[in-house]
Image (cartoon, rainbow, N blue to C red):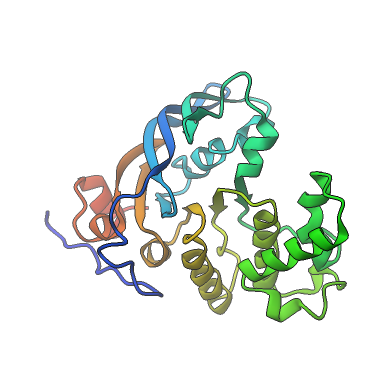
Length: 273
């Protein structure tokens, strides 16, 4: 290859070689297509997502990253002309099977969106929202789960004395962590993140990235990002999408230092995208 890709750098230390040993597969995606009417957004993608790893989806705008991400917890179902075919298997169970409980799928596979979307409620009620929807009654149990989730989102110490205040009064980075806490409260197994730091300043972005690296100790995380630097900093594996197709998937360090496909090299070295 003619040009060496840029050196990989990370905001936090990478895992040790022992930690890099293969993990059990959490999600198996087989021949996945996502169509919007007659337009194919995701074209025959097969991809294994390992448990308790961060998988980054990269590629230029319109390449199918977000459409693929939303297929992992059936969020595309709410789009009228969207159709998903193929198989997405979560712990051995096809989430698109006819008898599947879609609500349970979305509990197990949570979602954090590009822009923070706290409800016009208190910080406490934002985090407790999913618990109340799930009909959890005990006040002490709810309070304990809210604290657990805010701690998990690295926000408890900042808001513990103002839980009754509106979440809308928080900074952008804090609002995004409230949304992460809301996702954690229902105890998912997988967390999907669609450009979770794209609207944040560099300091807030660094906090979110550090949080992602901490969360992967307990959760399987799939993140869409337009920032290759961010993918290099936070992910264990990276999947490069182009024009709806999966071009290459592998260990993040390998993808960024010795990509196997010319299209991957051209993208990460800035020749297009």
